[in-house]
Length: 289
Image: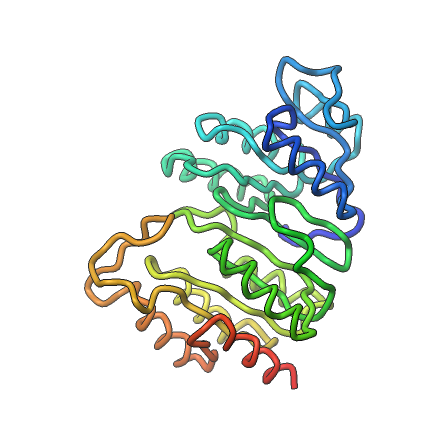
C-alpha cells in the first residue's frame, strides 16, 4: 500500500455530474491526468464533460481500468463513497470537507484492513509533476518536476511553499495534501514512509499545524526510519494559547500541541524547522547541497 501515484494512474471522479466534480475533472484532464470516467448513482449511461458516467464504482473500474478516484460528494454521503471506492481501487482521494469524525473513525479502520490508500478528507489531493498526475484541487501551474517530496496538513500553505520552491528552481517529486481533519486517511508517518521508498524523492518537506501530536509522532518515525533529509514548517506560532484554531479546530492545551512544542520535538530529532514559509526554501536548498 503506497499513497504515491505515477503516469499509469487512471482516475474516476465520484460526483462527476456536480458542479465541483465536473469543473475539477476538466482541470485535471487539462494538465495531463488520465481521468477516464465518473460515478453518479442514477445517471449511469450518460456523459459529463465528455466522460462516461457510471452508477457504481465497481462498474466504472471494470469498464475503464481505473486505479484511483477523487471524491466530490456532500459530506453526509462521503463515508459511503469512500467505502464503495475502497472495494475496487488502490488510491482514494476525498476532497469533501465536513465529513463527521465518527464516520472517519470507522472508514479509516476499514480502509486499512483493505490495504487501500486514502488521502483526506478535507484535503487538496495529490500531485506528481513528473507523471503529470493531479488528483484533486491543487493549482497545477505552481508545480515543476524535481527531487523534493512535500506532505502537508494545510492546503493554502502547500500552495505558497510549492510556489516558492518552483520560483527558486527547486522542483517537486510528489506533493501530498493529507488535510487537516482530526482523523486523516493518510498520516504524516505513512507519507514519509512512501517518500523513503521513492527513488525520485531526495529530500522531504513536512508542513504542520498546531494541535494534536501528528508532527511529534512523525519526528520520532523520521529519526529512526527516514534516510532522506527532512525539513519542517509549523504554522501557528502566533496562536493564542487554549484556543481552537484553524479549519480543523486544532486544540492546544497544557503546553502540548503548540507550534513551539512541536518545533522543540522536531529539532531534538535533528530536523530543521523554518520560522517562515520562505525560510523553508533556504532550508531545503541547504540539505540538498
